[in-house]
Amino acid sequence: MTVVFTILIIVVAVAVIAFAANALRSAGQTVERSVASTSPVPKRPMPIVSEFHVRGDTATTLFAVPLGDAEPGQHLIDLLCASAVEYIRDQANEGLPLDGVRHIEVSAMRGSESAVLCTVDLPNPGVLPDRDDTVLVEPLHDPIAAVHAVVTDATVSSPSDGMASLGALAELIELSGPTEAHLRSIGVNTDEMSLNDLVLGLLRVSGYDVHLGRSGFSESLGGKADTYGLIRNGQQTLLVILPHAHGSHPELEDTVLARFAVEVAQSDPSQAILVTDKYSPYSMYEREKRDKRCVFITRERLQAFVDSFGLT
Image (cartoon, rainbow, N blue to C red; front, side, top):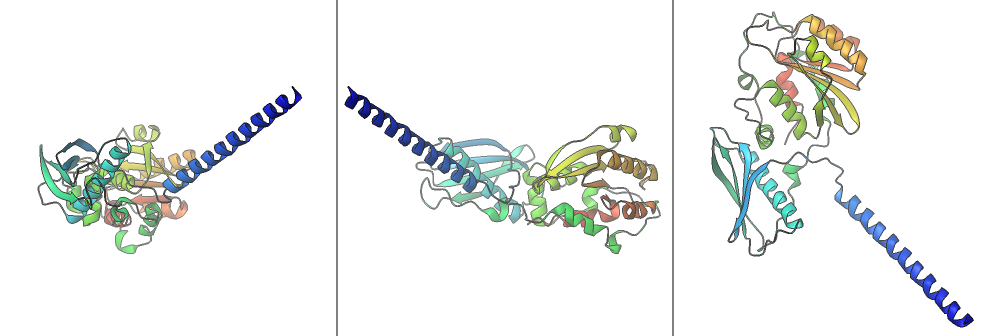
């Protein structure tokens, strides 16, 4: 009986040791996979797929991306092709069979109709090409940090007489090919974009987590402004967007600057940005000197603001 009991104890001990070793090995593999799959660079938001199907040797991906009237640029085509590959890769990881698939047809929207942009040929049937990080991964630099350089550029900060008429935003801002491509990829029609479309689009494609902020500031301006909170790499930023209302005074009022200063003092963010397509008042520059956290992106600075994101 003693011998049997001893053998039983040994068997149980071996089983416990084996179980523990296997658990540790599995945990290590899980951590390893997690570390390997986490990119040190945040990825830009992916274009929305409105339709997908596989017929014969072709997988068709239709993106809800507005093309506008002009021919799409090569940057937009490259971005949507790369996004289509990654969308199908996700589908394959969830069990979609790719046996026999040789091509990916990529389309987007021209008005209410779809338009074929390109066809991606797979290197081998059912084998997807490598991820194209040249168009899918955001820049390593912090775009908002670059925004602070805008206020030191005298060429974009000359005071206005406040009497010039204001034209459409799309006529004021010149977008590079990559910038326009990334904005369109998330649904921004750059031919008809509003100030909010432009600003929030640039932030989203640059890896910022954008969420609605406190409504108090907007209410203090009669509901004309929108307040947002931005988070990137743990840093919090207050963002206020104040579009020019047709028929109103084209220069930013000093009362707005005063209320903005109060909002910054109350919320105490790491940095605070007010973006408007109105012209600059002289008092704006004194307020920027007074509180280095505050940056005012007015009409004279909008182009430099767009360029500071350095989208490629």
